[in-house]
Amino acid sequence: MRRSLLTFTALVLLLAACSGSSTDTTAGPTDTSGEAPATTAAPDDTSAPETTAAPAVDGAEITIAIGSEPSTLDPHTRDDGGERAINDNIYETLLARDAEGNLQPLLAADLPTQVDDTTWDVTIRDGISFTNGNALDAAAVAGSFNRLIGLGDESEQSGFFGTIASVEAVDAMTVRFTTSGPDPVLPSRLYWLKVIDPSTADADGFDENPVGTGPYTFVAWNRGSDVVLEANADYWGGAPSVSKVTFRFIEEGGTRLSGLLGGDFDMITNLSPEDAAAVPKAVSVTGLEHPIFILSAIDGPTADVNVRKAMNMAIDKQALADALFGGRATVDQCQILGSNLFGFNPALEAYPYDPDTARQMVIDAGAEGATISVVGESGRWLKDRELIEAVANYWSEIGLVPDVQIYEFGEYLNRLFDRETRASAIFVSSSNDLLDPTRQLGNYYSSDGIGSSNTNEDLRQLVADGAVTTDVAAREGIYHQATQIACDEAYFAFLLNIEDSYGLSERLDYTPRLDGRLLVKDMTVTG
Image (cartoon, rainbow, N blue to C red; front, side, top):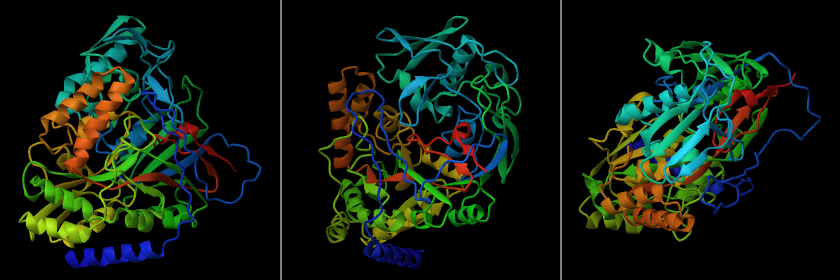
């Protein structure tokens, strides 16, 4: 392993030295409102020059290759990118976001009405049914939220909804949300939870036979191979153009590329930058993904803050951005918030690349030769395995001994969210799904977060305070304090903010979204 990692990093550094700076990236404007940002990011299309658009073909069938198979199709239990890619097309939420991130009604008839500091009312859109024929009403919405709240820690999505104390149907089409304290992020939370028909939740096979209100219906899940969906002809928003979509599970990026070039796929996710010129169409957008390593401050060699700081200083982050992502990534400024999102701390700077100092810090800490357990996966995120191996090699070069463990995605999630035993370093690509710091910092910064590896009570309290503070300036100041502590304590090995990149067939048109959702209803086929 050590020899292969040394070879890999040598290649990374060589590529970094040779890579040019001609690749353009896009980034949205900074939002200072404290609300979910209306961030825009124009897709970077590297396909042929624009020509007159061909008319869309209704009834077309497409195939999308994604990097991991869902661990379940229960939309309330796992925090699983494979599950979301599929269920985002079957289930719907009370609120949605447009491609630029602005909140808008979906199953709700309008945006929420705030009754008082802790009470919000939502009116449900009339005339919508689940695909099994049952009507969508306030009872179904309340039942959906109460199911997830009742799951507690059994749900990896609990961090999204911790402030919601109760949900009740006021009348047939009005739902009342009561929070445990002021919650400025409640509207954003309503963009996340998928509304189910509660009468189906206890049925056998619920986790593999989804029934929603969305534009697509579930057809089949062929384990280890694919999930097939068909257009919902009775969809309340109008039948979508694409009549059938097959999601194929292809972990290896080269295999996804070969399938696209061979005509087997119409879209591939996590397109490697070096392959953008080879595909019929390549589109990308500055996204929400921040690959990091969670460093354990609880036990083992990484319990020493100086070892954690050394692990940050050992990594040449700009070389990784240039070599692995062709410049389609920016170095994170010692935080997992993008510079275009509320809560970003402009006072923080990335740990410098200084392997000599890092090596001496490891020696001074008595950690030279110490084994560092490194947990990761492969195929879920762009260049994930390459990042894991390159960073592990950087750590080996300062005198640590990385024990890299790559797991199948379901088992990886078990270890990521295991609060009892924490690896020295756990790779994750942290995504700000709510477009607000609350969930991201709550899950990873706060000591009681589902993916955290620290016991810092002051930091936990700051994150908790930020979640209930309604004054925008005060709230921003709280998050600046929290991110400062996490940076000073090096609770993470901070890496990059990467673009979301997709390869498309010649016949498929799609504009990628800020939130990374793959909404097939927004895709069109021409010719």
